[in-house]
Image 1 (cartoon, rainbow, N blue to C red):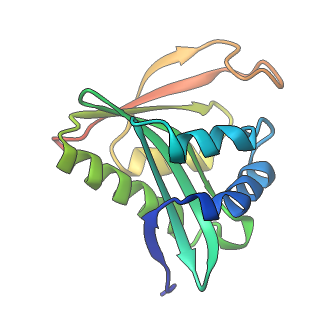
Image 2 (cartoon, rainbow, N blue to C red):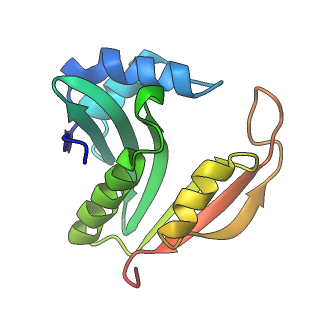
Length: 151
């Protein structure tokens, strides 16, 4: 069993968070976007998994009215397939439920089978399709939705 903690993201985490984002995605966020989410966006819910001072996963979500939109989630490649991303998602969903969230949604590349399978384990179901959603290659996105109350 891995030993790590899940906690709110801080400005001090951003260098490591940005590094995880850049190694994980072909369209990483600009560093200033993460800074904005941590410091200035009241809708943001930003979480990290930390092990011995090292950020091993991150999640950014937006809580709007009664919905939680998962904006970004990534695990450092050295810690993939060890359940860290799932635990982080579970934490974010539980926290949002405590705040009154009723549903959650996200977009995922249609080719990202690992992520789709993870989301399905949590009860997310395909609820739409966004054509040419990803600017790097024109790939479509699958929109997935979860009834938090029922999960």
